Length: 382
Picture 1: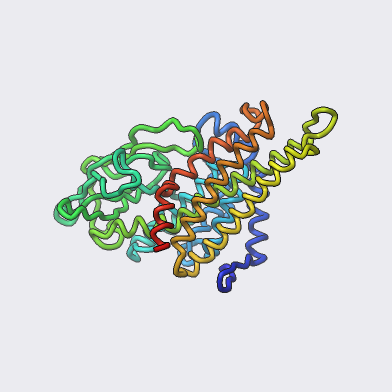
Picture 2: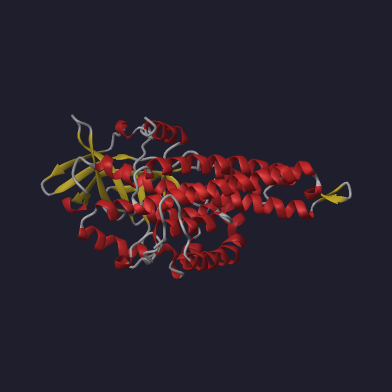
């Protein structure tokens, strides 16, 4: 567990050692595959296997369920390391938390025992199904319903923008269970239940190796034991989950920004114009200095937010939102600058910064858009 004191965080040596191991895995196993998996837009099962074998997929889980028990800060440091070379592969780890945290926070002992160990080992993959075609930032517009029939709930509806579609072994599905009061309930829905199907897959700007689309629920029946938390309290489940998991999007963004900065620096030292490496020119030095500074600042905010979330401190939700906004805006700005440093080479797929720029954009959108995060921050200022 991370060692922290008031208003600061400390990174234990064992975290740093683990990060170094993950960094080597990312550079040796993931980086050589990044361009190909982006081009083909295929889920990297081989990378997932490596992450499972190295216990990296166990980072979001407590020891009692087969996880590492190393906490929020270590998890997001790992996401950052992987995102430096490939944001799609970092999303594999992010979804390990997003799709299981509702069970960890609100699930019954039976649900925890049934699902968490198989996810911690990497045997199963989860998905989080909240958004719908007409209900993205506004869950109150949800149209998916669940009706109690005897001892089973019958779920009908279509979700949208759901990561891990067709990959996940189960989906955390949110549905309206009281039409009059618009109360929502969270359910675990196994992918092999009759009536569940994989709908349209999206063709995306970035994170192309992670399948995203529409899971469809047609008279899908689940037992009452698959309810997560209390009936009618599903919105609380969703919000408590996203308050933590948006840190993963922030970590992914920091990783993208650092990866782009590192590549741009390396390129600038080798690219010769007018008889000198372009790194020698002040215009390039200042751009790279700003990229490095913004990324470092983003990381500090992220790590503090992680420490606060781990300690469950007052104000953690606001810091989580601030980290998500600042880190994702930084990733977008830094990757645009990285493309500019590389010039024409930055605009072609032979070099990774154009992919990093495409991948960065989603960090401003998912896990709650930055506009929504700014509303959260503002409300906490009152």
